[in-house]
Length: 324
Image (cartoon, rainbow, N blue to C red; front, side, top):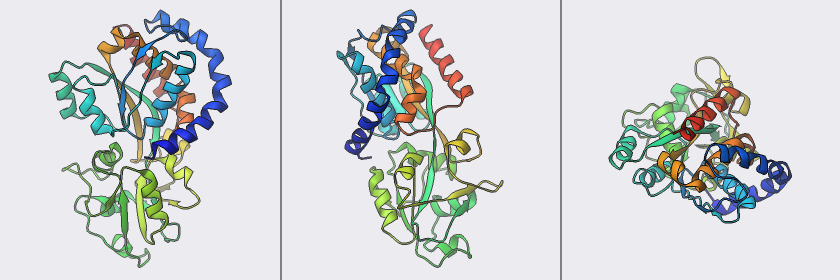
């Protein structure tokens, strides 16, 4: 991900909602004080956040908005990838880890070894979007065809090998690197790889802009990334609908929230170090503000806000954390 580009775009979005958010900060501060989080407007200290580049825009927006009323609160947000974030988080190097997939059993074991207890908070929904060059005459893939394209044993080099009715066009593959939570989600939840890998003969990049440009400028090209990046580049890409056996469904906020866009709709999370939340008022203030304003922050990051039921679950998890 190009973080400079993301920051510039989010600055515009932040200014547009500033008036709506800031008046509520004083009221929010009372709620934070009540649950031990510290009052917004007077918080100070440091909060370390790292992890998924996908979740980065949300966590960074939360930090910037909160800092407007808390200039002494420092919340640097890194983007080392979901796996890289958990490596730091599970040895106690960070307070919060952004993640575009659930934490793995191996990562949980590392956290346990280092005495790091945590809570998982879902913050948004994303629709992992399969895209192709706009000139390619392909509009929908079945889940089996996605596996034939990206599975660990996939060897197709021409679109006719995916479906004889598809164009006689060479396949060019672009995708995220192996440290990406987006890669992990494709490998584990979409193509359901026993080796937790996709095919390897593709051009990999951690910068979504590279993937976008690769697909837009290469006949027969395809890639996958978050719905946000497709929306930003819809004029130069074509999104594929996905058929899980119930007909072709296009990626959108509505289909993802309704559970219709399967299996490519995915949850996005932050993981919070429970001890730091209890002992560090800066961490509690940041997390409480984040969740209190979650819908607005998700929209700033251009993600799909949680449904009412999912938001209630996130609030419940945070209340349990606050209660110790």
